[in-house]
Image (tube, helix red, strand yellow):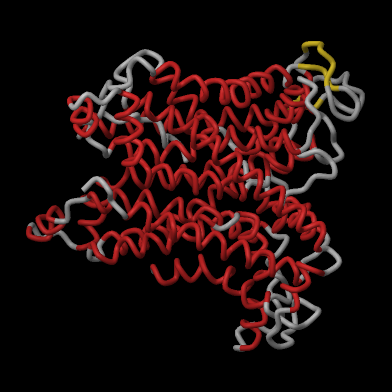
Amino acid sequence: MAGGAASGGSAASDTYAKARHWLLMPSWMVLGFFVLMPVCLMVIYSFLTKEFRGGVIWEPTLAAYDQFFFDRGLFGDSDPTLQWTYLSIFWRSIWQAGLATILSLLIGFPTAYYIATRPASTRALWVFLITIPYWVNLLIRTVSMKFLLRDEGPMNDFLINIGLIGEPLQIINTNLAVQLGLFYSYLPFMVLPIYASVERYNFTMSEAAADLYATKFTTLRRIVLPAVKPGVIAGCILVFVPSLGAFLAPDLLGGAKNFMIGSLIEEQFKGNAGNWPFGAAASMVLLSMVIVILLIFAGQQRRAGAEQ
Amino acid sequence: MTIICLFILYAPLVVVTIYSFNASESITTWGGMSLRWYVDIFVGPESAKFQQAAINSFSIAIIAATVATAIATAAATAIVRGGKYRLRGPSLGLISLPIMVPEIVLAVATLIFFNSIGFTRGYMTILTAHTAFCIPFAYLPIQARMQGIEDTYEHAAMDLYATKTQAFRRILFPLMMPGIISGFLLAFIVSLDDFIITNFVKGAGIETLPTAIFGSVKQGLKPNIMAISTLLLGLSVVMVTISYFVSKSDNTK
């Protein structure tokens, strides 16, 4: 999803130059009022004092961030030490999202490569088949995954019936279930950008490499991979970023023990914790992380563009 | 490998579809083919709840997608056909903001916003939030489409003394139609699909289909959920198929 609308394209015709500000006004108003302003307000909230059970007192403080990063002992008077309660939730989220990304890369890359090397007439159909699951409600897909992976679910039944395992595998409510759920949720995001970059790749380059006695593996590593790298990076970001802030997969598949950032934030607003400034601060940490990733990505894309 | 990939993508959906036709009371044992859970969601004990949720979901999705598509069409015209100007970059940035910011962060921000301006949470808060975050999804296909249309068509019309408004209405707009339809469908699906933001900004007592399904699943998987899921799944497949054929039809030739 990152950078999708970032380029306005080069076809800058100016037929409607006079009306442009009127045409842009509705989007500025709606997005400014209901997206930009709320995000700014959230930044402010993260520096406010919490009120019991939701809401805030308008007194500036760093308490929310302090609670996130430091431990001041039971009575709040000992020297601050770095504490791991929340940092470890963040760390686990990064870890889970990372594993899900690697998993989708392993499955997604060969798939994208295969589709891009089909004849042009069947390619559209393959892409269509990959796209359908993306259009299906994420909640429904996650529920389907839960149904499939249950202890007494169809997958365990099947494995027991063919005699591969004697006892049902306990997958649900483990880290593995969360990774599988994230992987399953965002796999199409991995396939599509890689497909787009492999499709643009000029396969005569591979033939040239083969003519110069490169093995298939060397060709892949030295010629194909560098050429399709932007697509791979885009795919990884499109899987990693939404996985990082995911709520449904950890909540429905992971159970209470496998908390991720999304669940931590949700707990502050909808759950029992009810600490809005802390939730806003945790959202800020997540948002900053995503911004850093996107900036690195934008820099890389620019460099890749300059090289060509 | 592609087969494995497609298998992984479809297996859970197919399994749920099959089990939605299960006659048995339990979700584990197979009791033969039956439509009883489909009957159940329309006339069963929970049917009133799900019907209200469906009405909310669909009316919000239709209104939000329509408004978002109109706003996005205007914005795309200004950005693709508005020449070069300073506000162009920031406008694009603002439009893509809802897809750059993680959904949960947007949900938190929106909740805080509505709360601090003293808006009572309910149908209207869901509708406004949906309209806002649907704009980029409607915008992307429309922009892509408009970039593919040469401006020679409008110029030809204006050479023949059409006004700019006429050139837009009679030439550019019809040519953009496939992009607009794709944009609308994508926005519609995204709104219908949304759980996280809706869950944050909805008030007590109002449900959309995803929040109703989520609430139900939290109490345990039940066969009627499989039936609703299968219906929604079918709807998504129909819509993506329409979108596929619309975007394939090229009316510029």
